[in-house]
Image (cartoon, rainbow, N blue to C red; front, side, top):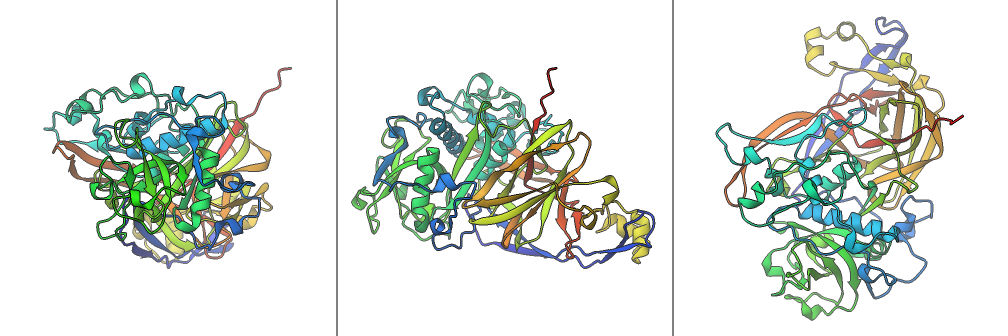
Length: 576
C-alpha cells in the first residue's frame, strides 16, 4: 500500500527476425519481425492511476462506460451518507477484522456490498454479508478448475521449513497478509468470489495470537463460487480536483475504498476524526484501507487533532468494530495527506439475473501484485511498461459454441479513448518457426536460440487477418478495470482461435503479470510466529501478444501475460 521511488529497468530487444510466412520450415518468402523496445517499470504498491487532466468532468462526452458513475444532473448536497440514501440504507453493518491484517478485503467487500444494495432494492443491508475470508484465502492459495485453466497456474502460497509444527499445520498464515485494493481487484475480476459469509467462509475467531490461526483453519468453499460478478473496478486519484467525482461515485455505488495512515498521532482520542497532516513519503505512507460512505462539507476543521486549513470531511466506515470511533465510523479530513496521494476505488457488480452476467471468463493473468513481504506493503511490486501506445492483447479458444458479449482490460490512466479489434485467427496465420532453422537463418547458434530470445518465438501475421470481425470503441473517465460490451454479440466457434487487440488512444502504462517461479525468505508476524516463505508461480499462458515495431505482427509473449479478458455466454439451443 505504501509507495517509494520508482525504479526503471530498460529491456532492449535488438534482434531482427527474417521469418518465412509461407512455410514455417522455409525462409524464401520473408517478413521482418522487429520486437518492440519498451522500458519496464517496477513500481512499489500502492500504484496510483495517472491523471493529467485539470478537470475530469470537463473531459466527459457521455459515451464513456462509466459515465453514470461520475456525473449527475443534480447539484451535489453539502451532506450525504449512503446509509440514509433516499430513505434507504446502502451500507452493511460495521465489521471487525480483529487482529487479522485483512483491512484491504474488508474495505473491498464493503464496497461490493454497497454497490449491490445501491442497485438492487430487494437486498437488505442487515442481511447482506459477503465473505472476507474466502478472498483472503485464495489470495495466498492455489485455485483450480477455472474454465479453460487460463490462470490455474498462477498462484502464491506459503511454504515452510520441515521443522515448523504450527502454521504449516493450520495453513492460516494468509490471515496476516496485509495489502491493497489490487489484491481484491485481481481476485474479484477473476470471479474468485465474493461468496456469502457463512460456515467455512466465515472468520470464526478474531482475537488471540494463537487462537485466530488455529480456529480459522477450515478451508473455504471452491475458489470460483460467486454470489455476484465484479465487472468494473473504477479507480481515480483522491486529489482535491477530483472531489466532486468521488462524491458522485459514492452516490452511484454506495461507497469507495480509500487508503489512510492509522498511526495514533493523527487521530482524536476516541478515533472519531483522522487527519494526517505530514508530508507524503519518508516513512509517511498508507497502512490501512477503509470505506468512504458519505461526506459533510461543513464538518469543523477544529474537530481534528491538528487543524486543517478548511472545514469538510468524508464519512468513513472502519473495520475495527462498533466500539471504535463513532459506532465504527469516523471523519476523514478532505486534506488528509495519505488520502490525497492514493486512489479511491468503486466496485460495480452484477447478480445472475442482471444484464451483464456472463457465463465464461477467458483470462490469462491472475495477479496484479507480486507479493514479496506479507507485513510491508512497500516491498510488494507491480510490473508494467512505461507510457507507450503499443497494441497488445490476448487470444482465446472457446470451449463450446458461444456468444462473445464483452471484453475487459485494466488501464493505468484516466480519460482513455481506445479501440479494440477482434479477429478470427486461421491456423496458417499463426506462425511458429522451427527454432533451429530460424537460428541458423539469422546467424545464431541453436544453443543460443534455445536459451535466449528465440526460444518459443511465434507470432500472428496481422497483414493476413483482413478486416476485424468487430470493433469496439472503449472510452472511460476513470482508470482501473472496465468491461466493454460489444454493440452486437459475436458468435464464436468451439476450437477456433480468436485475437483481441487493444489499441490505446494515448500513451499509457501497461501492466502485466510477470512469469516467474520464485520463493522469498521466511517471514514472521508481529508475535514472531513463522508465517513461512512466499512461493510465487506465474506461468506465461502463451495467450498474450504484443505488436512488433512494424505493426504488422502480434508477437507471442513467453514471459508475461496481460490483463485482458473475454466474456462469453453459452449459446441457447433451440428447443424444437
